[in-house]
Amino acid sequence: MSGHNKWSTIKYKKGAADAKRGKLFSRLIKEITMAAKEGGGDPGGNPRLRTALLTAKGANMPKDNIDRAIKRGTGELEGVSYEQYYYEGYTPGGAAILIEVLTENKNRAASEVRHTFSKYGGNLGEPGSVAWMFNKKGNIVFEGNSVTEDEAVEIGLEAGAEDITASGETVEVQTGTSELEAVKAAFDQAGKTYATAEITFVPSVNLELAGKDLNSAMKLLDALDDLDDVQRVWSNIDFSDESAALLE
View 1 (tube, helix red, strand yellow):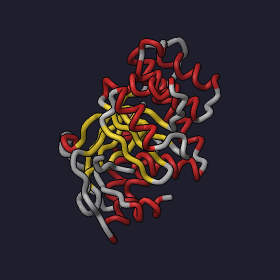
View 2 (cartoon, helix red, strand yellow; view 1 turned 90 degrees about the horizontal axis):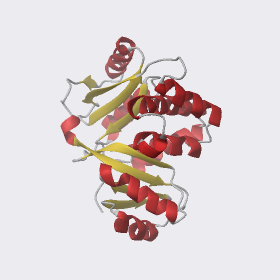
View 3 (tube, helix red, strand yellow; view 1 turned 120 degrees about the horizontal axis):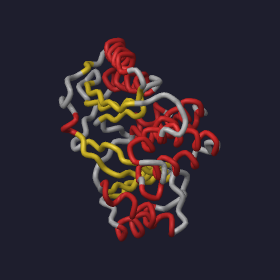
């Protein structure tokens, strides 16, 4: 078992507890639209779209919303055209942050990200300043005892997973990007329901923060995550169980 960054799991749980359905649906609509724009509207031949649809269905997004998002992406319906950008920087205390943005207005998104870093004591970096610290991986998250760690190890490793980690009622399965679909299919065939399954960024080295630095870093991460144009935020902070509890 390797160490891992709990930020995505923490944010998933926090969002569910806070019932941030509007924010979640907005993000999913953007992701579905972007996936359809890049790879077409057939999920059978578009892994990114297939993953987005699974997440949307797991979030109980209405089918009409999903269908409209796909049609906007393929051009069958008029709508906003989103572009994808990444921003990089550091938290107070020096932890790395990688931010994915989907927006129709790059200038607005850049201004809001820059302002948020400044407001919460972080530093916005140049392109490439922290991206080298992260590796692109597949990530499958199980919540609420939907799978045991032993079951995840047995099913996941046989299907090509690289790593399994467990914390409380959460089990995470890490894969290579090309193995994500096969590992998802293995869990589907076994009748195991996951909360999220996506391509993500995993830090190669984690950094421990404590005290004021940790508190300030979490405030910055929360503020960035709440921006309308921000899809996802990754950090190489090594969240302990104690610090994770502060976010729930």
